[in-house]
Image 1 (cartoon, rainbow, N blue to C red):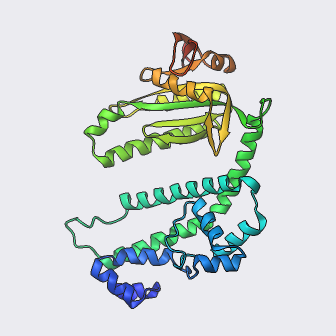
Image 2: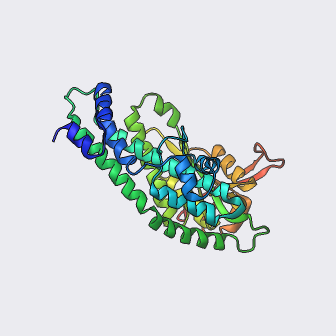
Image 3: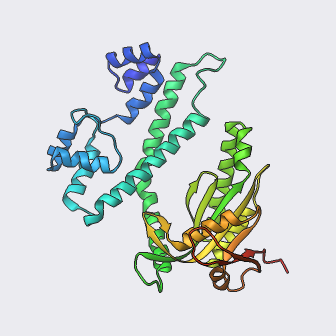
Length: 343
């Protein structure tokens, strides 16, 4: 089998094969054909089959971040018909459906971006390398990887059910005794890498990616071990939440204890009521935790007085003075967290 035979087996037309050959994109075409398999319906077809308008179809998919450059272009499949019918007829999330669809689209877009980046950085052959490319092998690889990615997507519902269960359990625990249903009582923490910026100026990109990967992997494992959750990564900083003050301090200390060549983590943790929206957290408690992380010296974790009280003696704390921090009207009593073995 040659490259043209492979493309034909994936559904390519002779025109597509000729164009891909002229442009040197045969391998890319193989991957694209896998992703577009079954996409024979236009937005108009989708609207007619779903009992709604073309504009409504375009609006729904735009809300999920999906680009539909031409309403007459066949981009949709029978699965898309079923999904759109569900959204149109059931309206499963009520008046706030737009918000949830935006979160869904944003989250899946990030998964897709990560998947593509991992492939490009670890598996895609170097087209500028010294060895002659085996285009057939490359095209097969593209088709195989994209097929596996779609198969993984088919199982996301299975993983989602587990995450829903865990999210419900976390919400119930975090809302005990709160003053408003939009609030959670949690420990919020930040850990950043001091020295990362100067290190990045003279370090190869592959080495930086490895360092960031190790940091993120370590943060994930530590948070999971203490029933916490990584909320997001912000450059060389990680934000997490934990069910109580002691768990938050433990997570920050353990992440901070991990360091690589030329960098030293530091952290800040606060416990209290936070506003939650779309899986993220806001409010004075979050802002204070961020400010404390910025104030800490390398290798240190700082907390406020309320976190000290809430941790109930789980850690030794040392007074670190009263500090007037940006965004806060009054000075904050700051404490440094010690390890349990510290006298």
